[in-house]
Image (cartoon, rainbow, N blue to C red; front, side):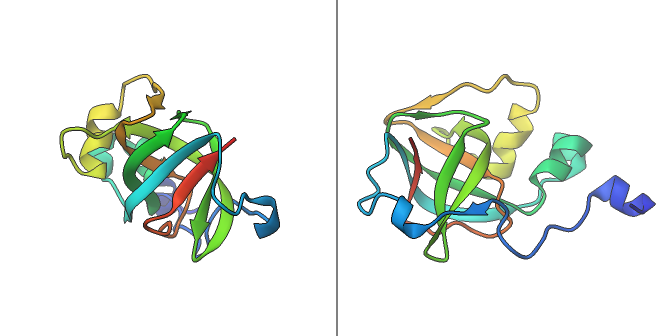
Length: 145
């Protein structure tokens, strides 16, 4: 690892991180015990000045999605199933932060740097940060059993 790679992190791979899931093992009707409906997803790249070097490397070129928890709850560290280009992929949830005030995904991370992760429950709007280097499909479900 070079000096600049150490400072600024390594470039994200072009493919989605996570492990592919066989489509036949996923409920056809997205009937999971816990569901999060994605309204919009985007790739983020927070600066080390804003969130700290460790967090900036962790979230660099990762997917953030805003949406509503339809049922159940989600917390940081969960493994979830999300659709990427129509195919289900199992990924890690880095963090999930309530989003009732309209801040962007990166602004929420600035305020979250030292906070303890708490679960987000049914009916709450939130930003979910996924270990994906591509955007998740909009208007789909993130599920967890």
